[in-house]
Image 1 (cartoon, helix red, strand yellow):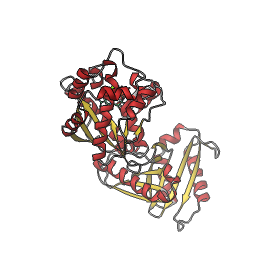
Image 2 (tube, rainbow, N blue to C red):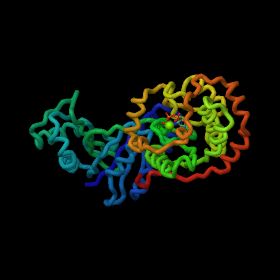
Image 3 (cartoon, rainbow, N blue to C red):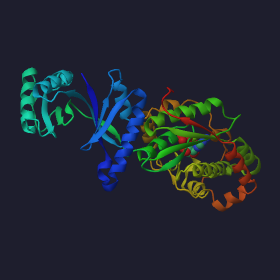
Amino acid sequence: MKELILIKDGEIALKGLNRRNFEDALMKNIRWRIAPLGSFEIRSAQSTIYVRPLSEEIDLDEAVERISKVFGIACFSRACIADKDMQSIQKAAVEYLKEDLESVSTFKVNAKRSDKSFPLNSPAICSQLGEYLLEQFPHLQVDVHNPELTVTVEVRDFGAYVRGGVIPGAGGIPVGTGGKAAILISGGIDSPVAAYMMAKRGVELTAIHFASPPYTSERAEEKVRQLLRRVAAYSGRIVMYTAPFSHIQEEIREKCPEELFTIIMRRMMMKISQRIAQANGCGALITGESLGQVASQTLQAIACTDAACTMPVFRPLIGMDKEEIIGISRKIDTFEISIQPYEDCCTVFTPRHPRTKPVLKFVEQAESAMDCQALIEEAVEQTKFIKIDDSFPG
Ligand code: ATP
Ligand code: MG
């Protein structure tokens, strides 16, 4: 039986004049996400996007899986394609929805007819198909108010579609419509979740990772690439920049007071990230910080970190509990990777008693013992990048 996927866009409906741009971006993102599976016809009509595979070999389960991760979709469903006559529609409904209809006790039929040349109007389609289904599945009853299953028939110019329940979409708005920002990504639990949350608000992602070889290993960097592959299933392709950080950490350790080590390190990360972000057309930085989680995430420490750069810094996890963050990381499948025990540059030199209420003036004074500008230049110059998408398993 021929199938297709029907997609309802989400918040897009609210965007008035921007609607067209949003819908174009959504269709482009859907096309990109499913292109590796084969050829599809993708078209939009009456606030529905129709995705039809153009060959029998295409794995529609995988297409559904991929579409479930595209932001900007409120809900979607699989439907079968029937000829535009009642007999075919009835036969298709029985065959296609057999399992669903057997597993419920109440249903209703919902019909939409946009092809006005079809001889029956919507109420007539509903009653004919409803009666037929009652004959075929005698255990069923019609419940128009609270049915366990709604069978929907759409008679369109280009075919009749029959479908059962709808699947919730990823929500959010299409990636690319919210500008571009750079996520500072570690191997931890939080930053991949922060990346996902901003992609959900339409932000295209670039990633920046600080590595401190030989204190941190190649395996730690591979772990970050794996995390980004999972995020890329939602955000689309991500360019990942890896900046060397060991020289900076050695300098801080040698020249700055131990209790300010973490805050100075975080400020250096922001300064370098801002440089990389600006060079790549990003309008903001993103971090996985959550207020009060660790010493460097107190209000005072965050104020000192923020003062290191002029770009806006988005911290989507700022008001969330660890449990909530872990819940999202499980949902997006990054949790099991994040908890693998590889060292991060932040854990290499951890001060015994980090200052929880740093004062900017003293932090800046302490930093001036180093040639910050030269260190930043050196790190930016030695930064490498790779492109990451989710097309290889990780
Ligand atoms: P995460 O779970 O993301 O590692 P965390 O709770 O461990 O966060 P920190 O280690 O203090 O917190 O880091 C705070 C934020 O700084 C991270 O969420 C991330 O955005 C950024 N960050 C930390 N380490 C790195 C790194 N090695 N490279 C790039 N960004 C980093
Ligand atoms: Mg961390």
